[in-house]
Length: 311
View 1 (tube, rainbow, N blue to C red):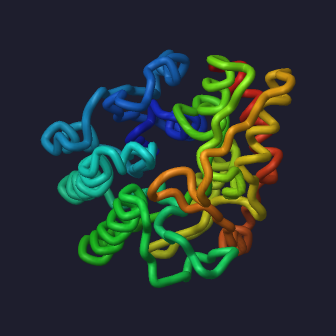
View 2: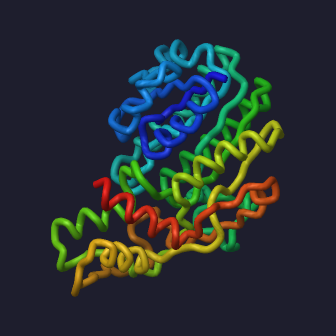
């Protein structure tokens, strides 16, 4: 098999590329805006691996690069939700339009299989929790979530019109080594600047399911291999969630700091577009045999250790 990974030099993509190399040839396509070449340096020693620096907005180059592959794993996006609120076209260009270009390049090259990284952000502030895949109506509150939902719609339409097959995974919050941003990294950086004080956005009661990146990659590959509808879609996460307050306390403890003053900025959300409480129903993917190996709390603890050592 020949696998094509967009965003393959990024957080999740670099881990996925390593696993897929065990099964076939891998091409990573990344513009390195968030990804880092260092994350795939060891993979480049493998003759089955190829790196192409390219931007998904360049359809002409993408069409050439994607030719000859069997499956596309589309992970590239602006994954920093708060950044999308500041630059209102970033999710449109790097999310929705980029996804269209991937699908169009696949259509032109007669590539039929796409695996897409979506997000819990598509559900917005769901009134039913734990939230399952059939929840609706869907009204995201971030431009990132809107872009992911639009991308899912494009994928569905391309599958119907051009006999493609898709696997859509709606990620929980993914944490672990190679992370580029997020609450754990934010806390570590703040505490290294000032080990006596930690600013926490919101009231600290925000709580979401955190999935370790190893479980995420395992879930992607497992779901791809064990479901075979034309349009396959799953919540990819774990049962339960972890509060921001608990994450802050765990980071402080792991860094060996004492008498740290935690300052909460107030309000139920950390920033505009932040969904304060997320709880996932993951029974659909569990029914086909996959289950997260780590709980949300354990994933956070493992990720804190990894990121402190790495950053």
